[in-house]
Image (cartoon, rainbow, N blue to C red):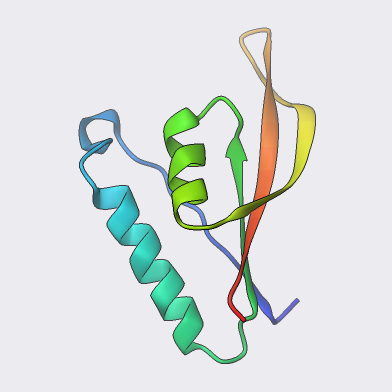
Length: 88
């Protein structure tokens, strides 16, 4: 697994739609591309997080798998989406 890197972030509501997430992802992807050992970045996001999912699509991440009912909060289930980006 030394050829893979995991990306994760959270954004306070006050900072959403400010472009900060895009800049953080661009920086993370560029950093990963500069590290020759890395071939793949991957992440997990809740399917209901439309802002996050759209950001990752924009950054060219591809859908790998959805895990149904992955997380439960206050009696409600949430699906989890795993996405990846090839660096090669």
